[in-house]
Length: 151
View 1 (cartoon, rainbow, N blue to C red):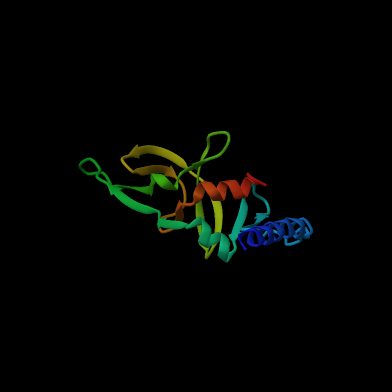
View 2: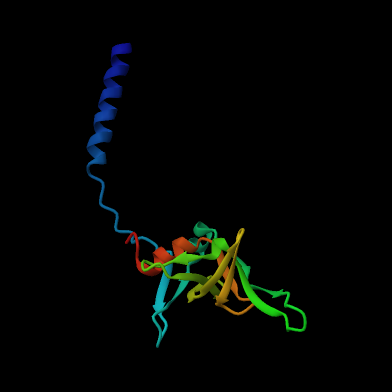
């Protein structure tokens, strides 16, 4: 009886291997995580993530803050922009940027000028307006999508 079971097992394994070789090649197209559209008149693109792309990247944002800097006696206090350091991305030339989020699941790279680093924050000399949402988690992936890395 044991010998019969072994033979049956061997026959089943051989059939599975033979039938497995007859499988057709998949014709399912991969789902793109985003669409990238050039913004007319600029060197920037608008990235719109699909629901699946958004879920997989785990994008998180924070608002650009504005804070007062105490002035010397009699002078008007200055205002400066502050972002989390995790919002910074750098292009191939080393220029700093942030990804802003003008609409749900939509992202646009924005240039900025760094004045100084302070702990986990970056003080900007220029950049997006206060209240603008900037990406703090997932921004390197957005840079890769924008430049076509991994295609």
